[in-house]
Length: 415
Image (cartoon, rainbow, N blue to C red; front, top):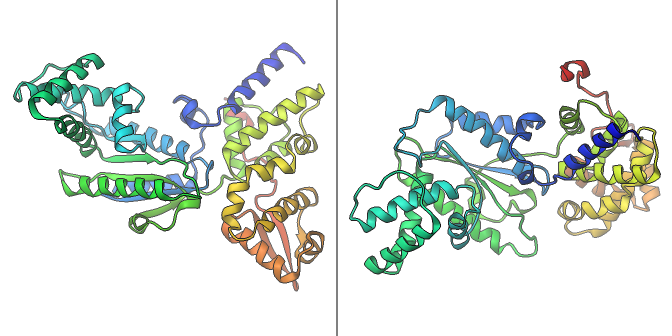
């Protein structure tokens, strides 16, 4: 393998290793992110919304955090163009985007510099502490060192009691959010076995939304809350949300992101990238992971030929797909773990042979006709993993999003 080709492989491997959007910096949104149609719809909704709360709902790993970052980038750019802020109002922000934290975790992160808005908060918080200590006198602009803030907190606590510091913290954070037009909140990945942490967080988010909308000052901030689709049920706050679903990505979108980044398909063939995309079931994080696994396998073989679908299937076995899809399959089939095993076998058959008759597949899977109908209905309706088409008295079943010509103009994209 030539030195230049090795550098290219290392570059692809580095890109594919960035599984979380938080590790990619900021330029990737502009360089290779492909905006899903549902996010374009959400942006259009935000242009006219006032005090709305929108649930951005998607399966774990489908790209909710990436979508929030893209929304933030778009709204920040729009805000800079359209809004002329008063230089004295440094805390005024057009849009904020942060990971949700409970109150104690929130202020700890804001003060130790690990929160997305630590710098803004510490600047405003330091000013407010010194105003309170000095009976409302104006404080010079600038940042405050952590040591200075700690000393000011102790002084204020002596003057006004133990609860004074907490009240000031809350007021400063609330003031920052009150002057914001759009608030993007990325929630945690919650455990399905214990919904209580999610319920507590949603109740706190709803309370914040109610509080901010109760003090109307020219606009009411819109909330966009990213939530796992597997968990989108059972809480009264969901009834107040407009739901926008971030569906699993089309293979074309994933391949377009790859092509935007590298301008070539090598060392993959077009069909092998489609195979990887279909294996990923529309989850971009899996697409990246499977690219890494395939490159590792390919290099171990010391194979100089392009990577084809057969090699991809060897590099990413069905057992690995089943492991990665465990959470998604438990959501599709919550009461029948047997169907989870059948799905992986069904996927293998359809991937290798193409569309098949439902009756033939039922025999190969060892399912009765009624059981097979229930099984494939759940797959089609709840996950869009397969397509069904009536063929006489039978049904023709195929994997969703089968391979089709790559919709990328190679010459135009390389200019």
